[in-house]
Length: 600
Image (cartoon, rainbow, N blue to C red; front, side):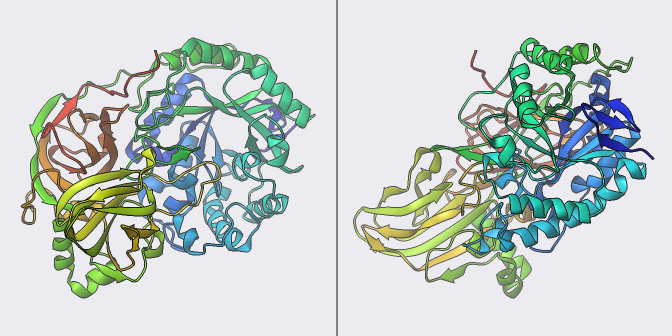
């Protein structure tokens, strides 16, 4: 049992001054088989605390339906491991988390009501947000420090001062948190600029700041807004995230360590964001849009002290040396990582995604297929993904036309990437990041458009936007209202098209439709792997049914990290869904991460 409190100028643990030296590590971005070793490595760097967000949309994928049996979402187990490693924990449950995560963690099913106002005291938002918080905090409350657990701080909302100033909303979240049995101090995190700190908090919440440089200046601003209590950088940005089509962001280990030194020398507590970034597995990456849509990469390496594969970097050692000046650092050295197997295997082509979807519908039976979204359904207006209850991934649209000459196909907006086919032939791609929404199509009788949701915006005013084709849709200015849609549940299709169980392969030329490819490989024992995507176009990959995430020749990253926990001794299956075309139909496993070029 213990007691954690806010003192006049320091945090107090059992009435003694306590400096929080924390690092962010998201359990949902790390395979659960590797949680302990990542936590232990952070402790070896000198941290005494681990911080994590909680993604609402992962834990409650449908209204009132909570995931309870997925080990990857085992928040309680993650917190227990932190305690077992002799560390404390900070929990940041949102309901909004940003985190460069899909939609900032806000569930897309909220969009069923077009008038709902996100992150406000609007009851239509507050009621489900409160329900989620009660569910999560029921797991956290028994693990607070005063119950003998590791949790010492819980956050209310997240960087709210950059979004709004609805004090009634913050008060409601605070009340729900306390009513859920949370007794440890409650904090907020905001950027120390303008009025963000004041707008994003309440008098009863302890304010912390987020920054990555000019530590003395930022802490002075925080002290101006909060005259008493411990100073804390709630997010010390030691790196940055990447988006597709740009460079890999890095920061100088020496410069970051110097800022950390200045922060600790000022007597402040810190939460390093990130100590270990991990991976945006599957379709979980977010996006930014400040005039140009920029989806986040699969790798969330963040140039952190512990890299995407869980290996210490130069920054790890530099930070460890700084921390050792202010706090005890364990007298242990991290074990060297095992060398990753290097080999290659051929990929063989399988079914295209529409053929695979038809085969899945036939396997399930027509009635079940219709109810499970694996059969075509008809509409009298162009629906969005949310209209159909599709919140991630791919959706196919189909409509009939009757043209004997080229015509202009146009939409109000495409979110986010649309592959356009006419009579089965691929005629072009419309890309949101290039602000494309129209193209000239040849004469034909049927248009099929396969739309990829590339990641929901996680920050700013475009949070909560709809996905898919945004109407009106026109052909040479004439409205196209009659559409069929087909949800392409690629995770289910991967099971159907697993190695050795392919339905009839497509008769179309390669690259016409998104197509599954397969390979098998042998391992003597489970191992971390690095799958090279050089020579591949754009798509996703799975190992033994575990969704590794997206790849794209646009870069910067050129590897997909395969966590050891997703592999097995003996035979392993690799499935690749290529949306464009494979220039090199080979799966190459290389020695390490390739995260792309930097600005240097």
